[in-house]
Amino acid sequence: MEAEKDINKLINESTVDKTTSRDRTIIRTSVTGIAVNVLLSAFKAAIGLLSGSIAIVLDAVNNISDAASSLITIIGTWYAGKPADRKHPFGHGRAEYLSAMIISVIILYAGITSLVESIRKIITPQTPEYTIPGVIIIGVAVFVKIFLGRYFVKVGKSVNSDSLVNSGEDATMDAIISGATFIAAVIFMIWQVSIEAWLAAAISLYIIKSGIGMLSETLSMILGERTDFEFAKAIKATVRSFPGVYGAYDLVLHNYGPDSNNGSVHIEVDDTLSADEIDALTRKITAEVYAKHGVILTAIGVYARNADGTRAAKIREEVYALATSHDYVLQAHGFYLDEETKIIRFDVLVSFEAPDRHAVFNHIVNDVKEAYPDYTPVVALDTDFTESEDKKEKA
Image (cartoon, rainbow, N blue to C red; front, side, top):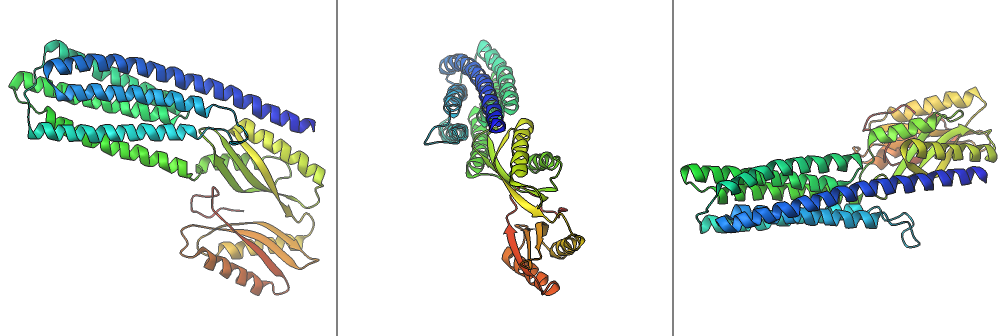
């Protein structure tokens, strides 16, 4: 009981500390972004209206959308940081993915509206009036937005915030817009040739493309993506590091927001361990995995391993070799030989690349039946959630 309390205390206290520090960083960064974008928008709008430049006005509107993106990031972060409740026992962390999706939609909408306005200006051109102070301010804005974009992306990646990263990408696109506007203004002032409508159209297409890409990535995370192979590999290595654990398999991770993962795993241990020993071992594994990787293991299943008998070890190697000799079989594990009931138990992991995973599975079962006619094979077909990168692994 004390061990359970210690583990829960470690997880709860660490989660609160990490969440509070992360949320403060995201909110502080977003507030900075709002202030900078509002100031830039005011300057650009004034210059655009005075000069009659649609490109500068659109640039100013895009700055407002950036400020709105930062506000949405703040709201999403605040909501995601709410503690778990009866209705949402896994917390509200996925709200950050929704805020990132909204920002992507804003970027996409800004690109579409800019494209429509640019086409209108191409059809019905207007002669802009640029001033040297206005062009200088646009040039300064380029450097400000480049710095702000890089700052947002850097902080966003450091705290694993897709909303901040998307806001940073949006700021970078603003820098491109401002840069193109700056070039158009210089060209017009020197040669009296107006190309800003065409530049605005080209930039709008770039914004639309980027918005679609961001939206696609965010939707993919909401649907649920495959866990990073190296991350899963590191977790299994931690589990296998405990004495008496012969293997870690079937790792399944569920993401409930950035840096918020719950999961389950199977461990292979001697069949001579008592329930008390297994209980103590799984609690230690749970605490260690959370301390090292920030993952809460809500369940640890057990594969029994024949602790005594060279015959079981020999058959295990033969069965594994037989199973993995088939194409698309990535791994075989969880073997147990029950001499009393004459049952052979094990699992096979078949790649999603297989044209028919069940056909491969049935071939393996039939091969084991032929090789060991005196035994009944009880085989489970596993799903490749995190176990491999579509290459055979050694069990």
